Length: 592
Image 1 (tube, rainbow, N blue to C red):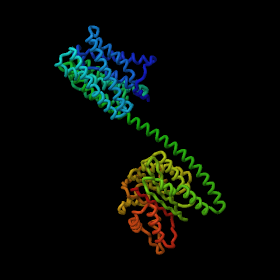
Image 2 (image 1 turned 135 degrees about the vertical axis):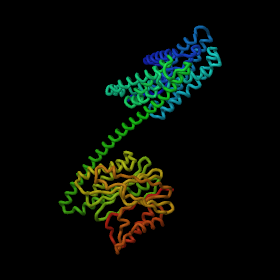
Image 3 (image 1 turned 180 degrees about the vertical axis):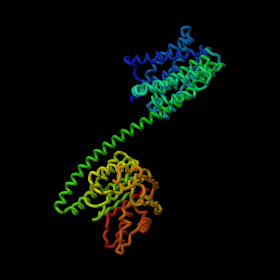
Image 4 (image 1 turned 90 degrees about the vertical axis):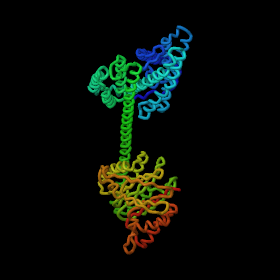
């Protein structure tokens, strides 16, 4: 797609002088057409002024340095209109009107460019609205000054000043609104329009046929069916985007002006000035709707393209990471086979898992480096049936927490834990902030790797994104414990948020999300099931009520003190009993 050239003043370049000549000729031709419908020729007042749109559109599309061609064309035009050769007074009037009119066109172009921040005026609905406001506001003082000049120089009586002023102002504004978008659209979107015409030429022919029929009926007959043109223009906007829609609008405007000037159609009034202004107000309303629609469609096209690019980039990176994980898996599998041959598999595997866990779990220094949160974590790897995993990382101010349990034991659990940690960090570095999409992408990656491993290992995993006090939670794990600054404990169920990962390739239908707001001093606890399930000598579980009581008593302390108090209380409850499963606890508090 070709973007319009950003506005800037440049030194006159002879090599590009043909553009100055072209815009001068186009402006003069549009002005001659418009003056054919002048209501006060002596005052150069006409309700139709497409030349203003030619000037502003050319400067927006190709650069504001084209003001020189616009100035030259206006000077020749005003010199002829006011007969500047007849005397100094007429010459002064022609020069004054030329300077003011040129200033108005440059003001409209530069102002529109600044308000849209050098984007195309068709890029968004907000930019279209700004362009329309500029079209009308920029020429309000121009119309007042030019009308005052022609009255002061005796070209029109002062009693006609309101008519001259309003006609001058509105004709310029309507001309800019109708013609400028056409030039901008065609300077930017010619290749896509040519492609659309080649592919959909029957639709283009049908649109033109409908335009001819409806225009003939509405503009030359006695049936006020102008509104039937709106669906045709919408059709053109959807199928041929802004080049087709703006071209159709200008053609309809030209046909309507000619027909109305001949006294035909529902806009014909005894006063030609009133008829043409009324006609153009209707066309301007349709043009406003059309331009807004084109901007919305352009935004939609851009969003789709950005999504396709992001998806392609993400898939490439995940594939590369999957290949790396596959290679690592092959190496670890080879090590596993050697350990089996040496009859040391179980002990060696558990040792490897411990090493992997020690390597990938965040250190106390990593947790203390997070400025907005006070975080402390604990994990204890048991000798039996599962392996705990958690991670805390910060990217661009967003903190991502993940905690899960890998079912089973041995080396495969460690491999799966390493896969999870790598994939989580990859997605975080790719700035994937939506916790639902985060888990869906992670699940697809793990599903394929689990298939490749030919293992029955599965895992539960919860992902929590934190930013400015807001938590977004998705995944399946133990209930999230929310502790307010006062020590009050709340529970957020995570049982139904998602299935365990790796069971199905597509878990979109099972993925949900919960949200929690944290005020300063508030926090959360994430833990594995072995914590409330810890047994004493009489097989009595530690339980959640005791956990909540300990948390409430020590919540005013730092996170590390809270974590130590909980773990100490759990061990006191267990006495001499050994924990049967891995035990992990993560405490997070929003700093005051």
